[in-house]
Image 1 (spheres, rainbow, N blue to C red):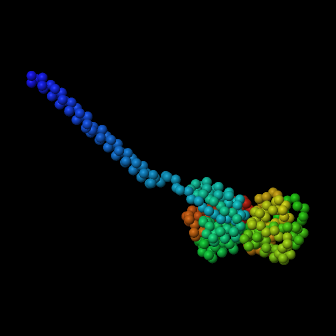
Image 2: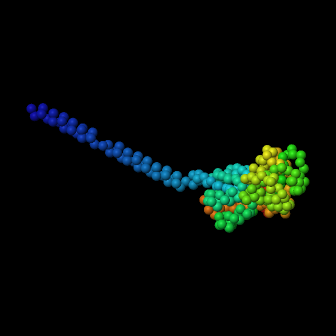
Image 3: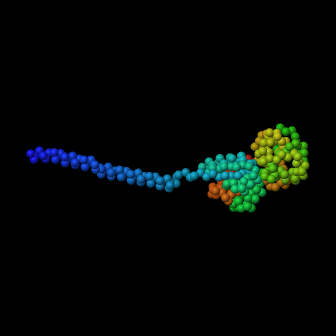
Length: 289
């Protein structure tokens, strides 16, 4: 009798043992999971560290804003391509306009890094106001003032006095356009400024003068030699004598308030390099010695 009673008891005891075993976690699985989490965390930390310390990571691109005289457009556009190809981390953005307009923008707080003027007057004003780094400014190139007429025009202009034969004559506004100021000085030198007042059409910059002559909206216009060379629709009628106006010099300067002084200084040095000089010569400018 006792033998038969033991069998149910042993069966029940075995069932309890199995249930207890099923309810327990597998130690090896737990250990494996813990190791996996630890490894993942370690890999993530290492990855983060590598990203932060990897010197091969590309540097953030810097944008330089350069205010430049309109007559420098073509030469600087070519130099932009050259410089950006060699300095992928730098983007050059040019703001072309009359030098006087650019001067006023800088005075009003425009975030400019470098300034290239078509006249020393505008640069000197900014130097006097402490806005230009004195150690990073110099005269870059020179130019000539010429009178242009439409290429097919039959009127012969041999000297300044012949301007009285013409109708409208375009020139930059003397107060803001250096080329216009040089033209005013030349006309005054030849005692024609007062005589020709009713014939003068004032423009925002030399590019507009060139356009007016090309389209026949005026009979003639005062521009730089470099502007005349860019068009096959005009011809140079005469060149103003150097003594008739102030020297036409183009200074360059780095702004004291530049957000990127190191990059601005590097581009300043590039503009003064022989490589850049050759481009300016190509477009008709004469580099300063």
